[in-house]
Length: 271
Image 1 (cartoon, rainbow, N blue to C red):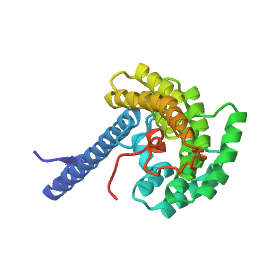
Image 2: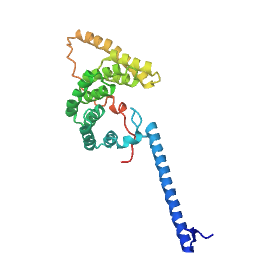
Image 3: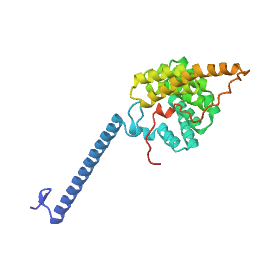
């Protein structure tokens, strides 16, 4: 049917032009609507990821997608790849923007420990611990990190002291008590080790390996209380003088608590 244009009959060319412009307008409106729908869907998807936490979400809360862009996530990825210098550089830059971020401070210490720069790690960790203690914000994570540091520095008594504080901060953590039992056993503190093992078993009775270890501790206690005394008494009659005990040599293969078990860490992603 011919299209009317301002009181007169439109020519066929004018009719085609009007329909073309109308088609373009409808296409533009449809494209705008599609973009708007896509934007809404994208926002909803991001909201769901943030609410539920993605594969890189930390134990402190949601934010899986954001964590990929967070310097902590990047630093953890570099740390797991063994790229210590890159990991430390990422954390250093982040601390320039957020100098009071304690999680970043502890992450830097952890990187230095894994890197083998123990003296530097110690110089950074001690002020953090003192400041946190003054503020009443000393966490089990920080104390476990201190335990790991002093274990690597072959100072087991200090390591044990920090791990005991960690069990005070988190008394219902069976793994902490188990790790404490092993450290105490390595230092021949058998009575304390047995007590720590029993506490861990009370919290998690299904630890079959710890049940066997508890029996080993009990045997060591019996051996220490009987055999050395009998041996010394039998040899004393032959003019034997007991020699002083040899100094303890820390066993580098002993199991010590690993800080990654208490810090949020991402799963392995693409390099």
